[in-house]
Image 1 (tube, rainbow, N blue to C red):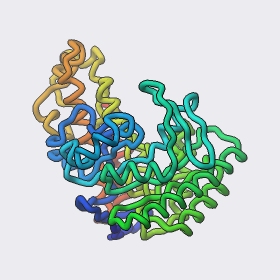
Image 2: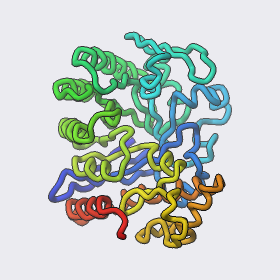
Image 3: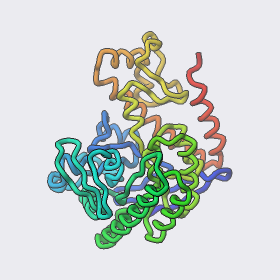
Image 4: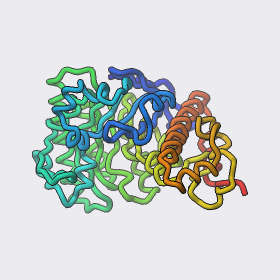
Length: 373
């Protein structure tokens, strides 16, 4: 895996780059649609191709439990199993383990947890999560880490940081033994403590990784803390490596993060909101189930050129949700993913033209002004 920094915006820290992986290149900044269980919910791989997504994200924890590694190995890995021939990044399962607070026990060696599906007992070590991701055929493998909840005491976050760094070392050793061209990313933890964030960032740089993720954010902290700590951490990561904020995904968040020098993003927000009847548009969120759209024959977003906006009205989409038709969430998901990917394309163009600050301000103002009466 190789990352080339092509350009930095003249008036901000926004960056343009190219990420080369075994399954193709990825233009950055990039938003990665989430395919938790081998599928981006509601979309076929063909549609995701048509939307020009260059990379998607898979989930180690969920794929390990179902369908399981035996089946995945027989299938030849996640790419062939789900019919996707472009890059895949897989998370290590650390966030899922974090979310299972009542069903897991963390030790220096790893995490013992109980399956949320059938209650069976499992034990994840750093080496095992690396092995699972390698078997999945991931283009970018994430180290195993402990995601710290917000708020956390300094002592707890400090002890967690030490575990995260030790686990990162073990993943790096496994990666070296494997002698692969896949990428391995370290994950910076440290909660909302700058001393711990910097300590973790420098420790990971000593180990050496192909890229660096900023973890433990977008877990309930105030928005301004999210921005502050993402920007602070990005500033102490090497400029020649890609930077990835995990699980962060509202449009306004992406715009601010890019300005602070972040290159990669993923989130379930566009697909989850679509399933619940909310579209993301150039003028903010639009809840299509609302009665106000019953006789509204305008497109979801007049500024959008996606298949949904060029073929269907708000009234029709509201009708689909009102009658429980599965096409409603499918079409809204297609639109939302298009909106996020198009946002990133426009961001890249703005950086190329040294006008990112102007583009960000124009876009934020439209998002905040909402629908025109």
